[in-house]
Structure formats: C-alpha cells, structure tokens
Amino acid sequence: MERAEASSINRYFYAVVLYFFLWIILTYPFSIQEWEAGAAIAFIAALLSYRELSVSGLKNIKRIGILLFWYLPVFIRELIKANLHVAGIVLNPKMPIKPGFVKIKTNLKSPVARVWLANSITLTPGTLSVDIEDQYIYIHWITVGSTDVEHASEEIAGSFEKILEVMFK
Amino acid sequence: MIDLILGWTGVVLVFIGVFFLFLGALGVFRLPDLFNRLQAGTKATTLGVVSTTIGVGLIAKGWLIFSLALAIFLLMTNPISSHALGRASYRAGVKPYKGTNPDLYAEKVKKESDQK
Image (cartoon, rainbow over all chains, first blue to last red; front, side):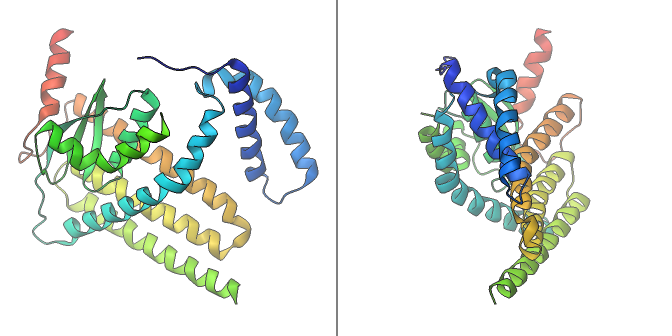
C-alpha cells in the first residue's frame, strides 16, 4: 500500500491550522486575547503531534471543502433514507427482515479513504460494516438484495465511492 | 421575527430527533439478534442525537457553534463504535439470527481461526 507523504513542514502547518481553528470554535465568544493564546498553543501542540495527525498535510484542506459541499449533502440524504428504512421495518408488525453477511469490493487505495467508505456504509440504509480486509469490506445487510460481490458493491457503495475517489485522489 | 423562525425550526428538529430516538429504542427491543439491533441503534441514534443537538443550538443561539461541533464529532465516531461492537461480538461467538443467509463473514473468521 503506497502512501504519498507530504513534507514535514507541510504536515506541521496543517496541524497548526487545524488546532487553531478548533481552538477558535471551542472558545466561541470571540476575543483577540483568546486567539493569541490559541495561536501560541497551536504552534506548540502541532510540534508535538504533527507526525501522527496526517500523512498528506495541507492537501486535507481541499478535502474538507469537498467533504462539506459534495459529500455532506449526499450523506445527509442517505442518513435520512436509512432512518426511514429502519422506521419502516420497526413499525411494521410483520418485521420484513432478511439479514445476511455479504462481501463487497472497493477500488479505493488509501487506508483513510477505506475507513471513510466503511463509515459511510454503516450509516446508509440497512447496512453495517463489520470488518475490512484489504479490498474487501464485510457487511451485515438487513434486507439482502444481492449476494454477488460486484452487484452488491455497486448497490451499497456506489454513490460514496465516486465521491471518495475524487476526494482522496 | 428571525429569532422566532429559528426557535421553531429548533423545536421541530428536537421533535424529529426524539421521534427517531424512540424508533431506535423500539428497534433494539423488537429486532431478533445483536447485529440487527445494532443497525437500528446506530442509525436512529445518529440522526436522533444530531437532530436534537442542532435543534437545541437553534433554540439557544449561544450554543449553536458548539452544537455543530458536537454533531460533527458524533457523526464521525458513532459508526466506528458500532463497527467495533459488531466485529468483536461476532468474533466472541455471538450467533446471528437463524434466518441469516448468506453468511460470508463466517468463512473468513473460520479461516483466520484455522491459521492460528
């Protein structure tokens, strides 16, 4: 699994930006004094932890943009659909379930992208990702539609995989 | 005027959240096995809690920015915890409901335990 690492200085500044932004949010009624202290602390904290925080550095800021404006609307729509689906099953006296564990295949290369995909799958209608092994994700599906790997991949992961492919290019 | 609209939107969001939280609890009560219950629990609590939190933020506007941050953290961590629960309990030997078909995950777990 290749990982395109950014330079240390790049990763360091990404950590500074992220910590400073988090500080601003958590000390909400804005004041200049808070910001000064926050900047100082962000520079020190980033020095201690930038190695563990990210591999691709400032490129992540572009990803957060895609995340907010493209991923999030799709995600919210799927989350609401998932909840209506659960509501339909739970409120039906007969409980129409047909559970099963299926396996899907993903083309995403980076480990972080796979984690995002698995997380997105958990919150889409009727699916819960149980385990991940290289290219394959094992999924508990509450109403099994197809047991074929290709077909199930398209049905479960299709919409998110396209977005994540662009996001983690 | 704007305050009034935001306040009522908040109230509506809180009610939607409470409704889905109730459905989640009902799902945990009614569904047959751990994995199905986990599904109902995860989805309903995610939307329920996020919707309730943002609703509270809209009612008490000083808290809006905190409630949004809280919602983002919940969205990111909730699926991970349910994945961990599902995986650990399958491997600890919790049997799925007898109608579960197919069970492709069983093959993988068996293969791994044979290797050890």
